[in-house]
Length: 109
Picture (cartoon, rainbow, N blue to C red):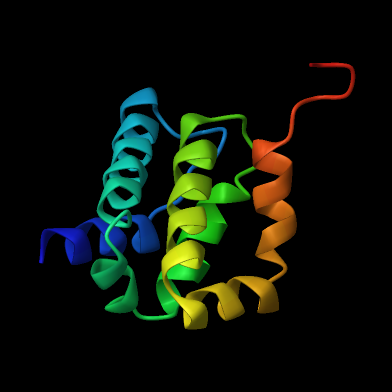
């Protein structure tokens, strides 16, 4: 039930350049908590497909924030543990977003 509330919080809110630091921190921490919960395969399989849409919205945020990384981690865990959620991520071209979040910048090693 707590996980459901965290996902609802993320679904109803978004981060923008105008967001306060505390609002950004709350959403970022909510995404991180979800990512931790999504380590459990059973939890992932119990999620509705819309959770992918919600996490992808935050992973694509236009600001270089921790929420991008935390949402991307949550998405990676969802996709790893649930075939239907992986399929939804593919439909939304979310694998490209994950790749961009986890890739090193050019020239880094």
